[in-house]
Length: 184
Image (cartoon, rainbow, N blue to C red; front, side, top):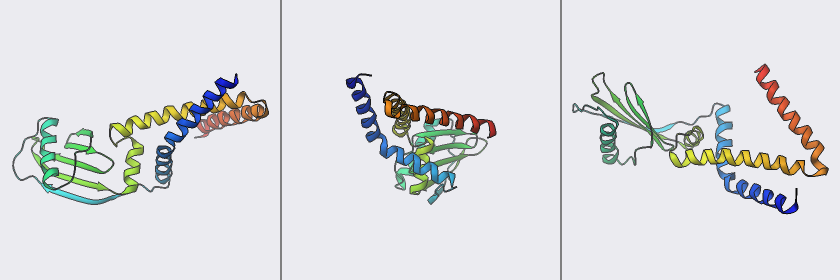
């Protein structure tokens, strides 16, 4: 590999690493905490009974109803990730979760707003429920990590002083993965 091409690979490797390091740390910390069953918690939960017989037939009606209560009680915006459930609607974000429950006739019953602590916020970012920006950043991080690992391998295999050990480590990593799948 020519020196100019190797320098380009090294610069891209370095720039992507610098840009994505903060997000990588969020994923590492939240993933490790989750492995130790530290998931964070809801620090505040507000429940609002819906006393009028409001029928909710669409997502837009559900959003309008939820926003009325959020605005009236200073809860901020409705999170962007939505799950349509049999018993209502749920919106998830890294700051809060909003749940609108409906009865069997789709009459609104209750609106619950759950505010997350810092650790739960990190976990929700890790799981991809923190909105479009964090979802796109997560995909970009995955692509960047893939590029960084491949570029590291390409560079190491082009350097005679580390080529043999790099091949040995590449084989050891591959064998560990295969063994993990077999015995896991």
